[in-house]
Image (cartoon, rainbow, N blue to C red; front, top):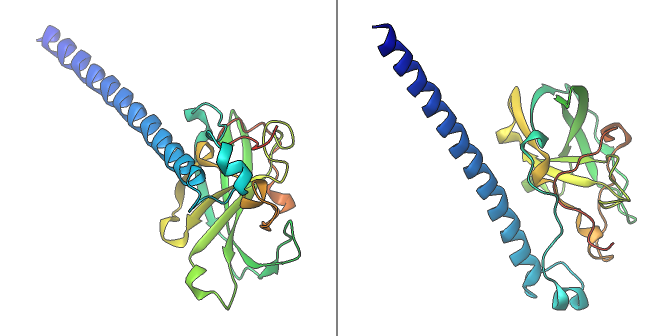
Length: 204
């Protein structure tokens, strides 16, 4: 009877291991598929945000390797009665955003907090569910774009415990084309950490 229990436990552990490996494989494939789709958009002159001369020679964005440690679980806390503010951009416009909530998480043993901002432009009610997570970190200006990077969420996918996946972080449009103006990450969204995940600089 004891041997049967050992066999059952061993099989259970094996199935758990296989399931975990399969899950990780699927995750890596999903991130790679996402990156391939972004590259396809950038390479197509009808959809690319790049300057024409850059589109003509485009061969793909430069990314960090996919690293699951940068896919972290965060605790969300709603900000009650957040006051809309005009965020600075790389241009002259100052779009209206409202602090929506905070995301607290640990990365390599250290605790961090970022603020999610909700689009509050009264002339664009269709964007009311859009949430921007604009952040800076210690790689900016070196390996990554100096103006920081973005992640996006919607009010529908926010919950008390949620995933921040820095492997999916992307550059604002102005990193590729001076014709765009982009939100500059608020100072409270600086991470005193090297986020070696997501997209790198477009130009070295």
